[in-house]
Length: 144
Image 1 (cartoon, rainbow, N blue to C red):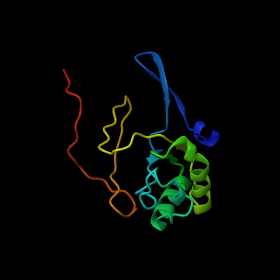
Image 2 (cartoon, rainbow, N blue to C red):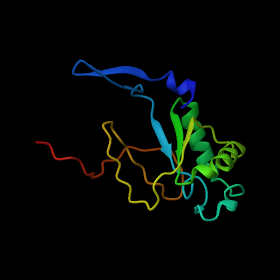
Image 3 (cartoon, rainbow, N blue to C red):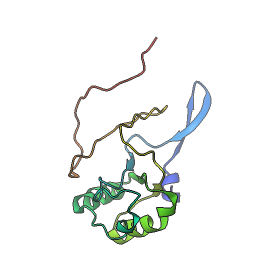
Image 4 (cartoon, rainbow, N blue to C red):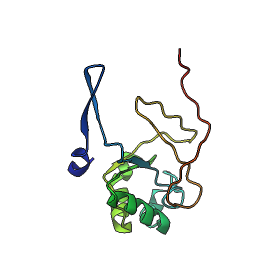
């Protein structure tokens, strides 16, 4: 994360104990997939395509808008560490504004994220637009 993003973190406590810092409630911490989400789906087995794929224009517009609003943008990809340089160059050359890049995300989809922080998931279905509020059914841990 960049220094600008780090400066947004606030110290937090729970039951009198210090816990990991948190962002202000109005700031979202977006984790954005790359392949199949902001450009065509390019498998790791075809890395030569990573440098020349075209980004989805609506993705650049929406993500850069979120960045400009002060949200944290981190790309989270199944691309391998050996693809970092070509990926960072592609993101920059394509005009994406972002704070970080996490690689080696497990492949295969069907993700189920377990965390001690609130996690919101939005499935990409072909076009970036502004987000809207909806009520959906989710799985949660059973309370005693």
